[in-house]
Length: 293
Image 1 (cartoon, helix red, strand yellow):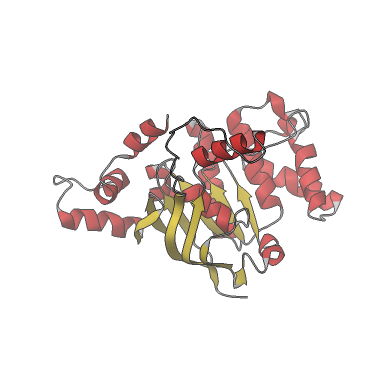
Image 2: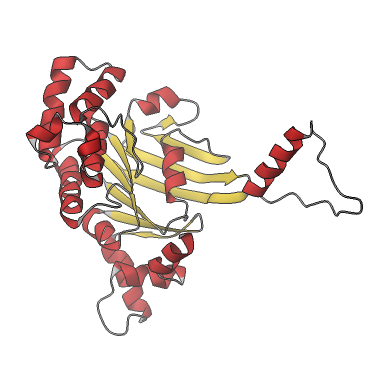
């Protein structure tokens, strides 16, 4: 097995413009012939949207690697490419030497993914949901039950909540169950796609502590996407800043801050990750988030 956990070379992903999709629906309704008024100018075919634009990076074994960017920057699309949920239009992606397109099943056995919109059977308890997931991965029931309790307890979920319906749990608690489900299979590459978004400060801190313990106590490599500057600074060994589908900088948190400090644009104070983001993208993270709303 390769010592390099993740290798992305020139990865590109494009999506059809939504306007093009609407035209296709109209064509279907008219048996392939879209009705036009006389002298109406034919619309130009919309250009595809480039979500990931020739991205290249390497993640070392046992590293916590952060991908920092605003909503719509392409970071979640990049994670979906790595997790085999999407196929790159260009470039190559390998996980511990296995190609995500040609060796999809081998890659799936090595990874697991947590997204911000994790889905569950809400009428079932965390134990029932996680045992269902364990069976899908071929885990023995008795061992899986023990591991479920261990992992959920580490994440701060009380014993009585483990056996109660998930619809009674807060959004933060449900997200902890999602992380537990991903770690249940002991992946050696764990993909965390904005795992703490929407969590209260206490829940966010306990999830972050769990992520650090994963790296320190288990043989796990972690790729974390976030738009939380402090989270990226606290957790990540290295950070790639992504903007409009492109990597604009990649270094350690200290290295990125030193770059801004050398440029002298921090008005004499020690730069933060917010300063780094503004310096390298020309805008604040808040500005991009406002545009998404």
